[in-house]
Amino acid sequence: MVSKEKESTSVFCSNRGMSHDLFFNIFELVLASIILLALLYFINDISEQTIFEKNFMARDLALLINTIYAAPGEVKYNYNENMEGFIFDFSDSKVEIKRKQDDESANVFYPFAKTKNIPFSDKRLNYEKEIVKIIFSKSADSVDITKPSTINTDIASSQQSKPRAKDS
Amino acid sequence: MHKRGQISEEVLLSIPRIIFIVAILFAVVILVKILIITNVDVRQIEANVLINRLLYSKDGFIYYDESIKRSFPGVVDLNKFKQLSAINPNWLDNTAINYGLDNPIIAAKITLRSIKNDNLQENQNEKDITVFYNKDRFDKWEPRTLYTVRGGAGSVRAFKEQRYILAKDGEALIPKILEFYVIS
Image (cartoon, rainbow over all chains, first blue to last red; front, side):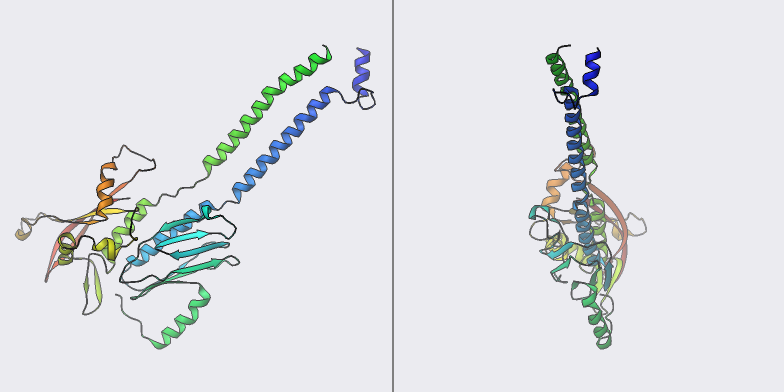
């Protein structure tokens, strides 16, 4: 009994080195810390995923284009969402959303319906470094998509030169 | 206890601990994966947008006056509707609402029904007129629209809606019902 107590109090000074109890305790602590780090890494990876945002925006934009086509007259709509870091591709009757750092398999797309009499101008918009809006504009001849910096001068010049057409 | 007995005791006790830790790890991973939403169901909205597009856009059923370039919401061009039904059944798919060569998104059956009214005798013998949008898919999906079937990879949902409209036949405006049966 006395010799055991002496062993447990002077474990680092003992000639036998570490006790087996201490070894197993340290082993469990290392195992627990590895698992904790793995879980934190997994949750951090999940939090950085953008699959939900891409799904939501693809469907939202496709339904918006369908709704704009449904309107009987001229329409101008500003789409405001947090679009930083995304690339929007409106072509082949579908909205495709991706990020530069993602693989092809992580791209999300959703189809929309065009009208033959009102053509849709295919467009690719890159919002890597900025958060701005998308402007949808429908006239009697076409449906167009632009960013604000390019549309402002066009609208100003068109308002000066042409009278507005009635709804058609 | 002998030293070797102590060591083997510790090893044996650590096995259930490791199993328990692995089970907790799996539980956390599965919980997180379950709570991530990857599917956003917009079929109801798709159906509503299709109905409104057919009713309000110039390329739908709406009556459009070329002389004044004005469309009349709520007024259906009866001649155009009859043409779509009998002569040009794919016009809606190819021209008005075109998803491309293949449309796996939505299909619809639109029926123009007369309102039974003893005062309007000319409507009593008029038959219902039916127009299809994406007829191939409609015929394939309709048997699967059982209300007892929910979810699954090949599941579809059906939406029914009725609208009271005026059908323009020449100069006359006849009240009718437009029934939409949309499958998405």
